[in-house]
Image 1 (cartoon, rainbow, N blue to C red):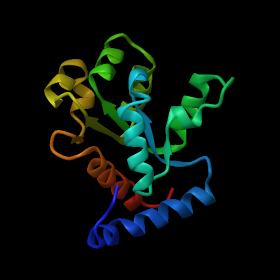
Image 2: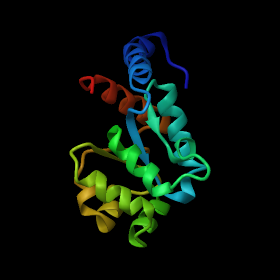
Image 3: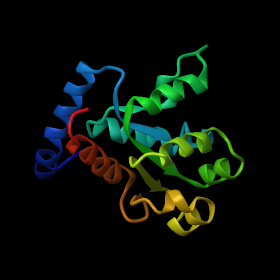
Image 4: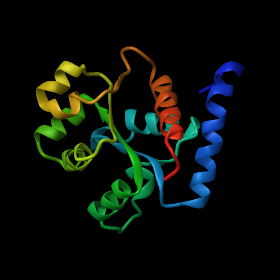
Length: 165
């Protein structure tokens, strides 16, 4: 993502803060990216890249689960060490929730906190409500209204504006 000079001045302090926090607390993350398995190489990976470019530290299964490790244990640690949960809501995620897949388990944990932000991508909040009224009740963002990189910049800025953990 390229920023205009004015946009960069708004994002730059948050990017610096995220970099310092990452050095001081390497296991801590600003964000936990919850997504459907089928989105890991597509929209989830794209959102992850935009979040990183915007200066956020992000727990992302494709980067943070080492080969041979226990997947559920690593997800549990990622959830514990992240300040905000981002739920990338796609048709695949809605299907995963209905089928009680891993994303549904992550969502159950995130809904028990006040730190979850749904991002609808290719679905509406009405479609989300039909599957998860609790997640749909949280304030979130939609890629119908903004590009995925603009959504990522907003989320990264909001995360960086939180008090240090």
